[in-house]
Amino acid sequence: MLFAMCSILVGYLLLGGYSGMSRAVGKRQLTLVNEQFDLLHAGEQMNVKLNVNIPGYLPFPYIILREVLSKHNGQSWSFEESVIPSFRGQAQLVFRTPPLERGRYHFKDTDCVSEDIFGLLENKGTIHAPGQFRVMPRTVFIPYWQLFDRNSRLVGPQTALSSSRRETTQINGVRDYVYGDRLTRIHWNATARTGAWKSKEFEHESVPKTMVILDAIATHYSSEAQFELAISVVSSLLEYRNRERFGIGLCTLGSRTNVIASTESVLERQKMLHHLIDMDADGVGQLLPKLESASRLFPQGAYFILVSPSSGPSVLELIRWADIRGMSPTHLHILNSKGDLSKDWVSALRRRGIHGCAVSALEDLPNAIGRGYA
Image (tube, rainbow, N blue to C red):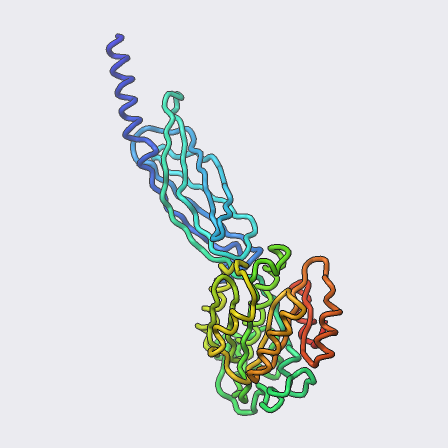
């Protein structure tokens, strides 16, 4: 009897070793909470589904799964949940991430722990089920930017010599409807034929190119939220210029100086947005030397849009540098939550004939640049 019991126990332990968690496999599926959009933007959530399969014949009463979601800057979030597997060792974990901020994310290996039905064996294992995704920066819809109005007093002497990006009366084709298009722009024949809203596409007159310069010097920002506001402002400007079919470029002044030349290409715009996804305020030193190292990539006569929380002589040096090279400078002053002394700085710019406005929250951006000054 004792031999039989020992034999059964040894066989059970061997079976448990063969059916352990070390051989578990899994497959991860990521879906957006709002499936009508293809991209995940900051503040939105991701649905995660993890299918687990444990080979063998030993049943488990429960499985504890520990998930770790890691961000590109080193931050991480842990999720732990227990699931009850089927008799065949199959289980499914479904959960939703918290609202996510801009960045690149990936799931690390999943730890799984369980005990047999008698509590004799504790099984541990690791499941490699990769999952990566990106979260785009927050953006706001900009219906109008006064700077690009040819009749605006805000344009500089260089841009006043150039014609603005007005549409001609020559139809150049049909495009998808964009929120904000006027009723007179709807192409009714194309809409009826395709069953989806279509708008008329008109040819545009020429317009100077635009370069957006993002200040990414760490000491210039008082908080992470202030830098996120700067990123969102730049992203919103990129979307506006792309929607209006304008050539736009991007220059980021951080630990490295990155310049993406001004272009109307949608692919290049996507490259700019992906560059902003994992951008950090990691720069040191002064802005002007960094800018001078890439001066050959700035087209003469372009709009020079500086997005920075800085003010004072350092910004005036940049504005003077842009003005000497025939560009029309503009300063979008990024404020912290307290508001700073923005009115004094914007007034100082106006006295020098320089366009500038202050932004303390993303929802204030359309109004600030729509009427020229904040």
